[in-house]
Length: 206
Length: 252
Image (cartoon, rainbow over all chains, first blue to last red; front, side, top):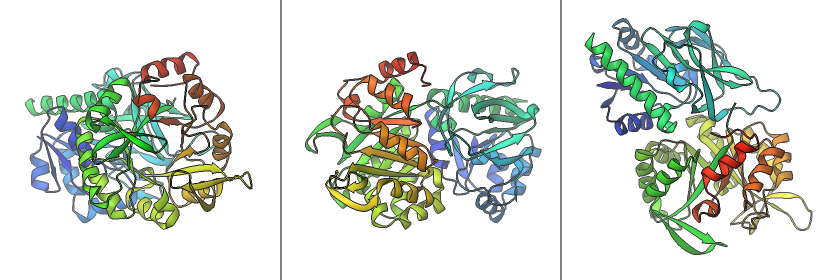
């Protein structure tokens, strides 16, 4: 069972619909006991960084997320949910994140012909041939964001080019992040969620 | 690089996709879920659903349409038509919409854009603008009621204001071009992109593949929206995309 963290994030239902469509059972919950019993956990998210962190704190979910990671339960952050995995964001003044992967969330430079938000289908380049997500080389996924993650190369699995190089998938041990929306990226996105489902199964067995 | 988006627009009336010819003679084109699935298979990048139902009690029908489509189709869904409050937006987003498109309600009360952006984020807020050249001054104005009612806002000023209030994307229809199949209004989009920095979707005037090529070659718009030419099969999306690719225009 994959648990989706319920903290009123905008894309929660669509993430759940995508998992349902590919036959992976999910539960939407903010209950620490349920999250810690899950085989995998998803942190969705769209919108503002500071208010998302505030909601996680209010619902006492931060310690639960740390416990999930301590128990090596695979964790997948999507869009804002991925950005929350990092140390801090510069959105409207510095805000501390979960600090699970080293890095800082910064504004996409708004110069020249580049429109912000970065919105639409962009092509992924794979940098980590060992990643289970390596199959998406040159595939398109759907991005919607105005901030990006500045992190060390070792955590970057894929990037998309938007004037700067924007990390699309990041990973550190069993913590994964996707900047784009797999739940909105057609067959390619559904396959990525299926792959996360496979990770969850393999970790459960070992 | 970011691909240019090809976006079919589906007019929904009482839970069915309809297509009007010159705003009358609504023809039933089919079931929204089937049509959306077909467009997904053909490689559409996004779908816009416009609720053209006249009655207020049909709002729940639109919610059902959005819910049913989002259970089966996994690409961005924008919903517009008759949305007047943050609660309306919330209900549609919960049903599975990704973006909310505001048009006349935002002109009537621009605060609605800010309220939506604060609650759901700018990326959620699309402001649709119907632009027409005012015959007396020759200037672009925002119009409503299918181009029949002129607003006080000049189009470029309204675009700027909408973005200032939190619109994350503009969907701009040239009413001068709409239905003419004579090509997109290139000058309009060039002017718009010089005053705002959010993504712009062009609509109105598409009649041939060449029209899309010219739009993307001469402007910085990030997407093009069309309805009848896709619904009635004048142009198929795979054919359009291969033609754009052959011209060196990035598509998925």
